[in-house]
Image 1 (cartoon, rainbow, N blue to C red):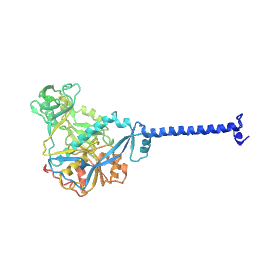
Image 2 (cartoon, rainbow, N blue to C red):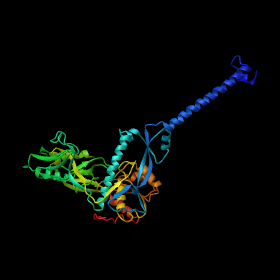
Image 3 (spheres, rainbow, N blue to C red):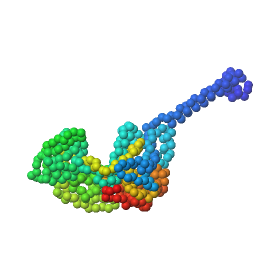
Image 4 (cartoon, rainbow, N blue to C red):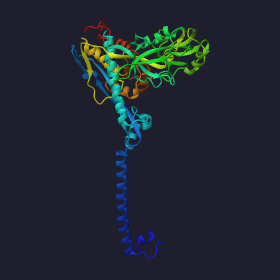
Amino acid sequence: MSEVHAAAPNLPGIGDDFDAQDDEHSTGLGTKLLAVGFFLGLIAAVAAVVIEIPYFSLEPGDTFTTEEFVSVEGADSFTSEGEVSFVTVTQRRLTPLTWVISSLSDSDEIFHEDVLLQGQTLDEQREENAQLMLTSQNNAIASALDHLGYETAVPAGVVIIDVVEGGALDGVLSRNDVISEVDGVSITEASELFALLSGPLAEQDGPSSIEIVAARPGTESRTITVELTNDTRGFLGIAGGESPNGEGSGAFVAEVIEGGASVGLLQAGDHIIGFEGMEIASFDDLVPPLIERRSGDLVSLEVFRGEETLTVEVELGVRALETAGILNADTQFRDADLPFDVGFTTEDVGGPSAGLAFTLTVLDVLTEGDLTGGANVVVTGTIDRVGNVGRVGGLHQKSFAALDDDAEVFIVPEGNFEEARAAVDQDLRIEAVSTLEEALEIIAEFGGNATELPTDGTL
């Protein structure tokens, strides 16, 4: 017996010849197992790299010098040493391997596709973001030219946003229809319609019906007779919503209705925390006491604004638009005729968050001097036509991108400040703004002409 025999004493008939065959068989089996293991490992490696899973990562994108995308025709344009840049976020569908890589990165965040896409396809999301970018650019041009003293839009009627369900205009007018005349009076702004319906037409001996001239986009105007309802419930004249910070008790004021009772008294962003001594925890808490009040009643509100609490007295108005069957409406504008054109040439970038950067750059390109004093300024935030700056998404990633770009200051919307600061700690100067003017004041610290721009409508 050889030592090999001793290695397997319980196997009958083992001899030298069999041992040699068994060794040969084991070697062949081992090679096959190694080959199979290698093949399976290769498949697993390829799958980890190629197969997509239902998750996306949000990663820091690039910063773009906005001046490169601005075009001007009919007026002089100027270049500057400094830069105003907007910043992007990269959205990437993950594989198992990239999921691991992103999960280990401080700058990336991972979301399930249901959370990120909100029921849209990627193509639908891209299309929506492209439209948001276009709207952002139009608002940016308007806010910049408005700051320079130009009238960029002319009121051209009252556009319907929604009608009262079951009311006089239900099925007659719909969203985007435009009212141009009421009882022979030309109407160009929502405040004029509100004043008309809450004034002469709301008087006790006023008419029971009115004639409205309205047009659907692409069609001719038509005259509609509307029976007015007698609604004297008190109307505070605000629209509620969810606080953008997700913070703060009380009824959040998302909008002050044009022409309403609270114009000049309340502001968008206020929190109403008290009504006639009653604590208000949410917008719904305002409904019961308002139902009991009538137009003309004077009510006292406790309002939290910024860092202070105010007492505001409001004389309630009437639900004027609703008396004519209109739930909500706004002023329709048409572009004013200007002696020059401003446009953008961005491609493959979507969303509204470059609005403030576009506005600042249009101001810089249209005026002599250097807006930023040679500084590298990175900016994010939406903008409306009158220069209000709004919250955006992706601040975690954008903060890292601004840091990588060696920004001398990163200007963000006020509602995004804490998110940006938490992302990059103390490694980047971050400034929060809520208006275009506040952004210009910060930029002026670098020695440029940000607060010395012309405002008389002449370039």
